[in-house]
Length: 294
Image 1 (cartoon, rainbow, N blue to C red):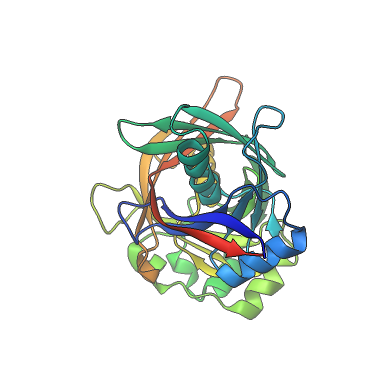
Image 2 (image 1 turned 60 degrees about the vertical axis):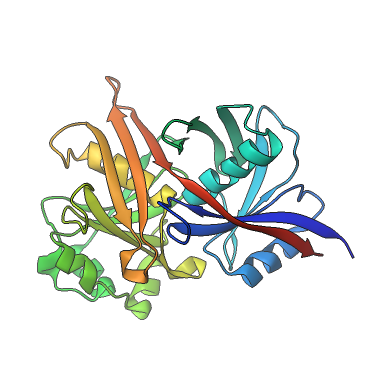
């Protein structure tokens, strides 16, 4: 019976057992797609990643990402968690920059050793469909008045699309529960299958925004910390000048409603050509390692 090494890390974490946990498998090129999917379902984290080889391919490391239900082309916290394992266990801390090759594209990751923060540069965002306030309010089981109608509800993607919903208070964020029937009706007509709500009121004064992310389509009723969705949020904030400027450097709290408090760092700016550059950062803590029997 073959064995394969894996590690468990908490991503966007301020300490052990906070943030979003992920399992990372090394030298997984010999595992079939079907087996990867079975492992991800068995572990049942929001995502599980598989590093296909310790060797580079086309300048980066080939990585696959699976949710409990299906493979996804890109996701944020798997990027940072996987990069942490490559940097510490494959490269032995010898590099401050690396590239991960996903189905959704190449993602560069850098390491700020002084602050122990990992940063990923996300793909240039695309902005899609603008959704109806009443329809989304019904999906979220909240009154329409809780939505901040100064800004649109819109699909945004930096590799994995999400519906961004601006709310006006922490009370509004807390009230959100997903009406699954209306949710699945909605996403039949959208590229995005996840919904992120956010507001400027926070639990901790040093932070700038509070967010929640829901993705039942992927088998994730609510995620503790979502780098891809927060990258989309950063793009949205810059495009619509939410903070009255086309540049941000902010702290975002997530996961409080499911007792997995997480902290993400977002940087984004719009250059003179209208291109939005997006960076998502966070800390990673290793909590376990083991061998999986194939």
